[in-house]
Amino acid sequence: SASQGSMGIVTWASVKLETAIKEEKPLFVEGSSVDELADFLYKTLKFRFGDEVCVFNKKAMASILAEDAAGMKAIESKTAQWTALVDIRWGALRAKEKIAVQEADVADIAQEFGLNTKNTIADIPGIQVSNKILAADGSNNWKTKSTGAAKEIFFLSTIDKISDQLKKAAAVADKNGYSLSECPVYLQPLHQGASLHCHIILPVTEESEAMETLYNEMSEELFAAGAFFSRPYGVWADIVYKSNTQHTNMTNKMKDI
Image 1 (cartoon, one colour):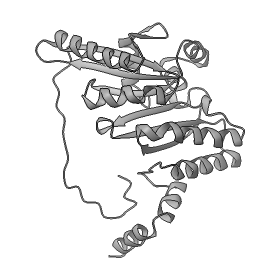
Image 2 (cartoon, helix red, strand yellow):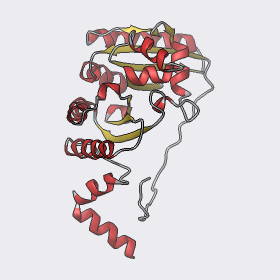
Image 3 (cartoon, rainbow, N blue to C red):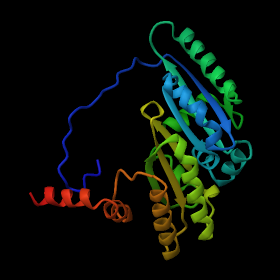
Image 4 (tube, rainbow, N blue to C red):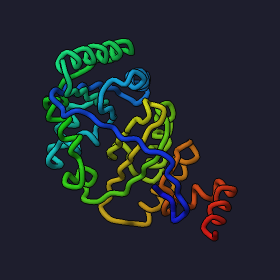
């Protein structure tokens, strides 16, 4: 991934098998900030609770669940700034019992950090919400639902750093007359919470020099704040390779060979 034509060597791979799902219980935990959800996420992921654990800001959640712009506004009015989904699923023996135990454990962890679990989002039943989220692909244009087009910034980070990085991104947006609160943001914890994938969607009505400036400045500010662009193309390639001349020289040498 993101080899830029250099040599890549795959030394190992892992494959996960799971039984066909018989029972499913989506739980939602809401917070006013990512920081408010951080400890809950760390502990939930540490014990591997939930088969799907991901986080959405209210704009991303509304974009996925609503059919149109009017529906988005209605859902946003009933949704917290950030929502974590913990989707518990099981298909083997004693599925109901296993899910009930995990549900109680996740609820206990939430309460430990002053939070509560919910079964619905904006009055929409949990199963419907999780089905929409897990089915989100090219057929559901949630990334471009509000404007018809979008530019995307995605990178790897950690749960403890992401809040500060998003604040820096918001400051760049404000400086350029743009609002990050209007941008869908999706967070995917990885490796039991050791790292995190962040996806910021910048809705645009048309490509412009101002948007290009915003995109480049936001990328540079995020990189300076510790964002790791694991797929360095376009402006990200310039940012990443200029920051590590040793790596860049070695990459060029490998290409020559």
